[in-house]
Image (tube, rainbow, N blue to C red; front, side, top):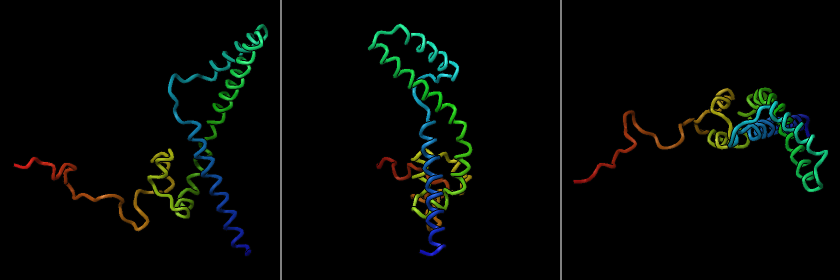
Length: 152
């Protein structure tokens, strides 16, 4: 293998890693149903669980141990969400080249959860690979209901 080939493989791995990390981060930070808990409320619940562990029967203790693990994981996720900016910056750097190499178009990025603003910063547009806009074109002023008038 030539040095250029090895460099290209390394660049591809690095780009893929940056894309994967960003997609995983936006998946973790996707809005969930229900009321959001603040880190303070999670810490308070964690201390309540620790207090109850001391006097809990074995089955309740099992459930409390699992709740404690869940709460600790929630705190860890909350602190790691601050890293989204650096992951986004790395994604923006490589997304266009990665998408072109892998044949990933704008709509696929959007369906994966990448915001339009991030795609714009990455210079990924809605145009197809041949430079034309995707989908059916309409002339200016044409109604989407054209041709649906009732016949007499």
